[in-house]
Length: 228
Ligand SMILES: Nc1ccn([C@@H]2O[C@H](COP(=O)(O)OP(=O)(O)OP(=O)(O)O)[C@@H](O)[C@H]2O)c(=O)n1
Ligand SMILES: C[C@](O)(CO)[C@H](O)COP(=O)(O)O
Image 1 (cartoon, helix red, strand yellow):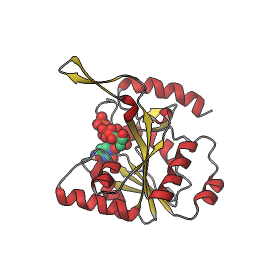
Image 2: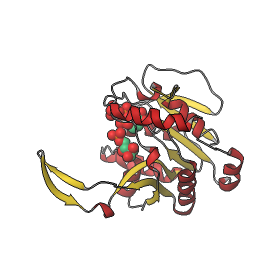
Image 3: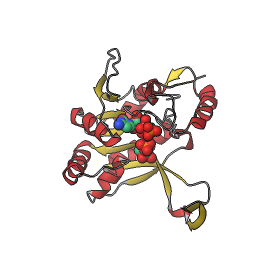
Image 4: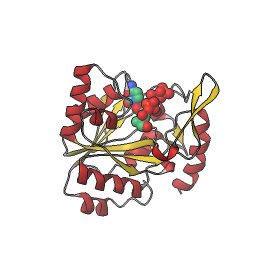
């Protein structure tokens, strides 16, 4: 994280301990460069960006793709991920010990400090929050390749990570999803399905998720400013 000042962070949020869960076990099919955690941007692996951004946390737990191992690192535990993102997070969550857990995609290497601070504040106040950004373009239904109904973008947001929760609340949400055999694309949905509101906190467009090959060009450009 650019300009990180771990001491200030801990003073501001020292009242709650924080476990950071990094699901990094995806295969990166859409990007087409192998497991995304090890893809390099600006000469640095995506996983490294996350480990640096969250070095202030009480503990960091990382789900790696099966068959991958990394050298030990202080304050970091590496576990084997599952078949889906939800399964990977569940494995990490069972090993977490802090009051609050932050779940963050390693596929989002640029963690903006101000957004993270906003999120932590909201989690402290409400117990469940996610970063999200407005939809910048016209949003439309795809009717088999034809322009369909326009969806009012003012009422919609693109959901980012990190997402933060009281650990016990997220445990309850994952257990309920397991009981119901449901698979969710993010953790906020699981908490909402439990009936607990999730605060939407202003994210940052630089915290985009590297998903498609062209995202690599965007990330390389941003990395030049980020890493200097
Ligand atoms: N079984 C899985 C699948 C995904 N993830 C993680 O969840 C995050 C968001 O997933 P995504 O961006 O979809 O990554 P991939 O699953 O790797 O991408 P793709 O769907 O294109 O294969 C990533 O940090 C990814 O490593 C995970 O830990 N375990
Ligand atoms: C968690 C997430 O990044 C929020 O937008 C998103 O749901 C992950 O989706 P993916 O299909 O696993 O990339």
